[in-house]
Length: 81
Image 1 (tube, rainbow, N blue to C red):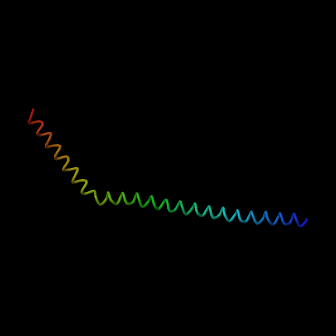
Image 2 (cartoon, rainbow, N blue to C red):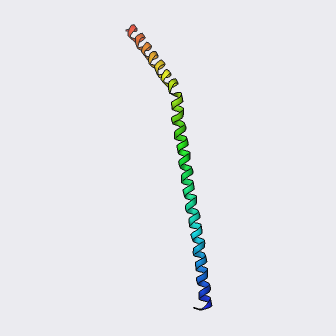
Image 3 (tube, helix red, strand yellow):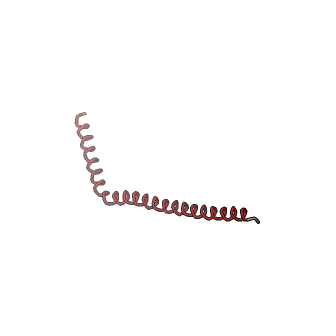
């Protein structure tokens, strides 16, 4: 093997190792990005469920008041007929 061929082979090996490092870095970045995105969505959905859990008594009261008001209007409508 001539010195020029050996030099080209060494450069090819160096480039392959550099590409391998870059690919591993990209793969690690993608994995971290997926984990962070998953945590983000779990936090968003968990916050919504938690807010509903804490606000549920107030929502139930509002629904009851709405039903009472609707029943009152129905009674007034029946009295008018």
